Length: 158
Image (cartoon, rainbow, N blue to C red):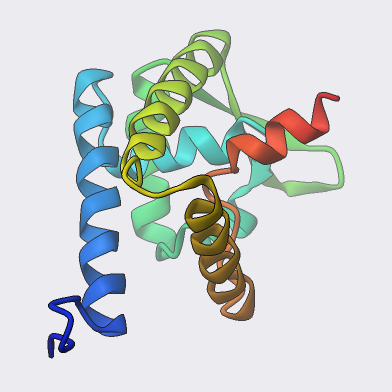
């Protein structure tokens, strides 16, 4: 990870280290809410709507057995429930329970607050530029929406 002449970090180092930084915030938030990072992701995905197990696997990048275990543990904690899929009697959908929806909203809001603080030293223009560039990287690589942007939430509610 080569440093630049100005003492900055190169693109690889910056992306890897920023992912560690965001993951650390996510994990810390999760611990405070009694969630593993994977459970936090699952709850945040389900905030928008229920999903079939076959949709959740690729979205969360989990093998079928890992996803089943995650849903089993989260269901035992009373945060999600399995529902029959009205379009396919062999399939099930996963949805938040009322308790899960409240916890997901609290976890999501706190995690957003903490992540929003990470680039605090950047000017508004720099923050916009960073968001635009990272947004392009995410879209170009077809990263699934596992954590919606608070700005999208605000725009949707207006």
